[in-house]
Amino acid sequence: MRNKALLLVILVAMLVVSVPMTMAQSDVGTPDNPIQVYFVPSVEASIIVSGGDVMKAALEAATGLSFEVSVPTSYAATIEAMCASPTNSMGFIPAAGYVVASDRCGVEVGAAAVRFGWSVYWAEYIVRRDSPIYTFGDLAGKTWGYGDVTSTSGYIVPATELANAGIEVGDVVETGGHNQTVLAVYNGEVDFGTTFYSPPLMPEGHASWRVGDLSEPWDLTVDESYVSDDGSKLFVGDIRVMDARANVRDTAPDIIDQVRVLRVSQPIPNDTLSFGPDFPEELRTQIIDALIAFSGTEEWASSIGSSDFYGWTSIAPAADADFDIVRDMVNNTPSLIDRYK
Image (cartoon, rainbow, N blue to C red):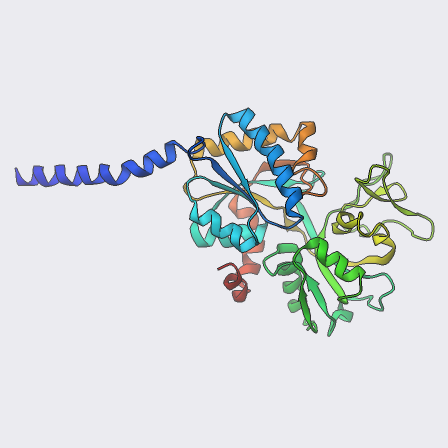
């Protein structure tokens, strides 16, 4: 009898403990408990907010769920926010951020960006076009500008490649973002900068850019650089520029004439759509399906598909193992983990 009574007490206690969690998960996506959508501040916050609102409207129409868009102040703050909201958060975070978040609190990747058919992107090392820097080794002792030490293409991959090559730079300048890094090089405030590289779009009738092709497949003595009439695109001749330099075309329309790509890095897995560790599985699938459908609409280009936002052309499912190459880099950079705390 005592054993039965004890068993009953244990069962009741288990129910009491489990009910709050069940209730918390069951009301995710309601107006009282909207899904928190976090974007890392890699470009201008105003662009992310306006584009994020377009995505929010599309997701709410497709799923009937409620969403709330936020742009935390840093990559680290984005991860902190996701870990603090394990049941109702989703975040558009880069590969390194995902690896750290996964290790820290169990954040899970659900999908990753596709950009014009590419599931990877690169870091680019940029210098002024009149710079005497022409080889990787020439970066020794030079002033390095990067957006944020937690940025995959802006810092982590270049830092790993520089260390592996035995190249010790001089001073370092944390610029605050990709656009700021490009402008720091343009203005001569740093000797070189590192930011993201996406391949140029070749004109119709020409072969697409392939790995191993020149990072700048044009001849400035023949081809003129210019901004499109509507201000939305940067070209050299008929070739559309898609790397970080295109994002500062309004401020520096002559950016291609003044800043060149020294080299590009090894391929990097694209940015992720990740979810809090206790995010409901059925909602995760529903959201990913809705985003894949959204990527086929015109509104996508006004949201995360805009070249001024994150430049995703579509989205595809992804698995944790896809990010092992970045995980190895992060694990070999102990000081990096501290910056995410």
